[in-house]
Length: 117
Length: 294
Ligand SMILES: Nc1nc2c(ncn2[C@@H]2O[C@H](COP(=O)(O)OP(=O)(O)O)[C@@H](O)[C@H]2O)c(=O)[nH]1
Ligand SMILES: [Mg+2]
Ligand SMILES: [Zn+2]
Image (cartoon, rainbow over all chains, first blue to last red; front, side, top):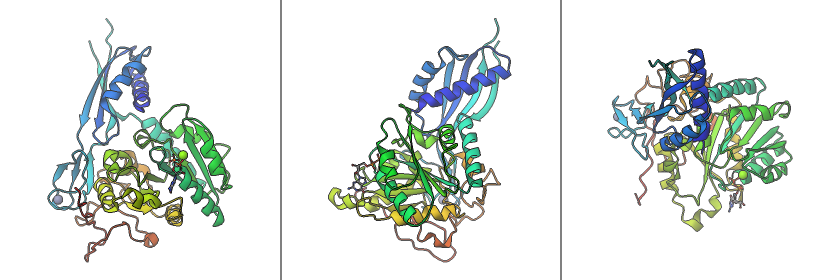
């Protein structure tokens, strides 16, 4: 379950941001997870609450934005949903996609600082 | 009052950065690292033992790191080849990270090593997220694991530079459908080469070593559509698209082109299935036939 490691990286990164901002604690973070990132949102939620304990993120809210995987066809320039299980071939032209546009995200999008009372 | 900051940084930025540094340092030392990913029991150690042995017979300096949750058995097996081998005990961690590889090779990896093989922890999910500074990522599976496994683990197979099928000596016994497997691989990783190997018969061992050496000699590996963003943008200094972050792995200036390939002439046919290359389409892909059972 590498979501524990991923959660630890989120906590570490968000703690760094809070420090830069001069904040003592983090109220919440938003993480973007692509459909093809290999990270399971529920497992990350579970891991996050464990890893956050006793850190600046103790009790912080975790918002997960799931990003669907989309690819672009170089033949007809259509953007299409890769689907699940993924298929990286253009449904119109039956040629391989030119590029994957979204779906590999694993990023810390936003950090919300806990305000001073 | 609640202040929020837009950060938009990769969660694994630290690992990615360390991996990029490691890749650069290895390149300076002329070492090419190969990351082997598969489920437990797919035959990584058995195949690697033969590859190491063959490499030494061919006079190449090779070394290997092997990761397991526990026991030094794999290192003992690999060391029979005579190559320097180091066991990594992850103590329960399900994947390797680049900082571990970095720490392990310091003061151990002999100067003049040409190829460093890293047998990752047996797991097709977690290791797929972690760049180890490798130049070549290989996803393996055996004929007993089901033809559709690449669809079940798309991140591992989709981001591989090379796919290796193992235990082909058992293919007939288990009724392995090679065409269905090829279709599944092509669906998640169009254009990737598939090698058929067996540690029993020795099939594909030399070919695998040849492919690794081709990359070590500077050929650009296949660029998977699912390659992690930091690799598409910065990872391959010699990659044609590395300078342009807006471009994906494909040569998007040419609509007839599929995903980019190695342009090495020695590379041989890129796929295990037939290609119908029309004029002007020499890098295009034909989808493998649908399996009859689909
Ligand atoms: N028949 C056959 N068995 C193999 C082959 N490669 C490995 N095995 C067996 O599969 C089991 C697991 O192999 P191992 O190399 O330890 O897999 P790993 O966990 O991926 O390192 C062992 O019992 C091996 O003897 C092969 O090519 N053919
Ligand atoms: Mg092993
Ligand atoms: Zn199209």
